[in-house]
Length: 344
Image 1 (cartoon, rainbow, N blue to C red):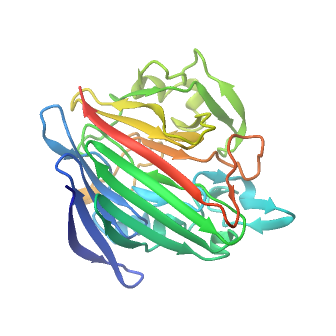
Image 2 (image 1 turned 90 degrees about the vertical axis):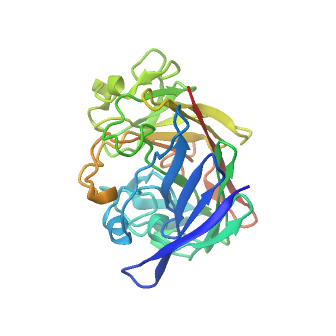
């Protein structure tokens, strides 16, 4: 049984109120905001059976709106980068909002992370809905979006659907920052990360894909688990300041397949991700410093790690990449990911 409890709302400095709800199945619990579809807290048990929050968050709506780290939010319409803020389909060209160098990142300056979602109750979780109008941050088509967060035993399911009345690229992701030692920890360096795939995208200085690397044997081949401290300062990560790479899933059947596992030795917590998406971006919070966290805390570089299932960056412009991110009228975008929490 999942218990659903409304919390006191926050005032939105832009006007109106931000709803807050807590859902709890006795094993896992979430606090969800209507602002950005944000997961503000995620409580999971450690090896002693004590629950603790394992995702970074903020104290207020003002703090969330002041940062651009996408803490816990739904990133969209298109997660990751689109080169030069431009896309084209059937001879129609679209100029997108540019918010990262010359690129459109995570849907632009007013992406889904800053929208006010409608939030409702499910038997095992919450459902968030949003209408993104034609031209929103430059993207074509009126787009109807649904995101479900569901708790099933020791699993968090994140399932997303979308439909549009004009062809539009769609790629949403859940952008939580995980620290499995608990949010009092100021570093993820002791975490171990294991990834089933050894293939990842080579990128230029702005994070745009320029090829595929067969990483067997290299520092970013994580088929055998490595600590984040052993790889964050590798030579090939100097330009990105640490991990910020998209691993390829080769999930042609669009079924849930295993991506990999994150584990923390002190708490004994582990998180295993399964997804139907063609890629997973791993971001080591390389530029998190200076953002406000809970209790007035200033967040630190490498304090947590994002593991983001998604379509591939710049795939609307690079048709040779895996997957087809263009959703046409009559089609339905579907993203499902399962986060399994255990202890060792």
